[in-house]
Picture 1 (cartoon, rainbow, N blue to C red):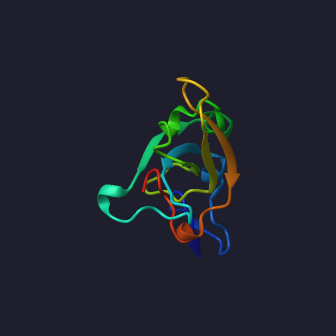
Picture 2: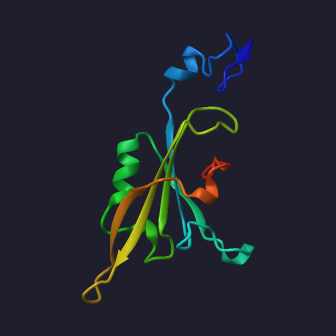
Length: 136
């Protein structure tokens, strides 16, 4: 017998989530970070840039924040990548899905706040075996 990834209840082999956990809504945790052109974090503790920005009750609300042209979450280019993780309830719960975005700052024409071109991207290769950025 296996166990539910959410609550630990015993399950038949091959089943990852019990019905109660499957039907419990996720939260959508938003993390921003800065990655170099190769999709890697800068080396050294004092050079890392990563911050959990907040959580949202739906993917749509989280995506609206990430893709907003005013880019306030990117703090004038200090961060250039956003990640939304769909996380179920539980202690150290493993995200059910990840949504990655890259933000390129567009040059402002005057003293106006910078705008951003935000695109959905694949998970960077350097993080293929990493999960739980926002709550991990």
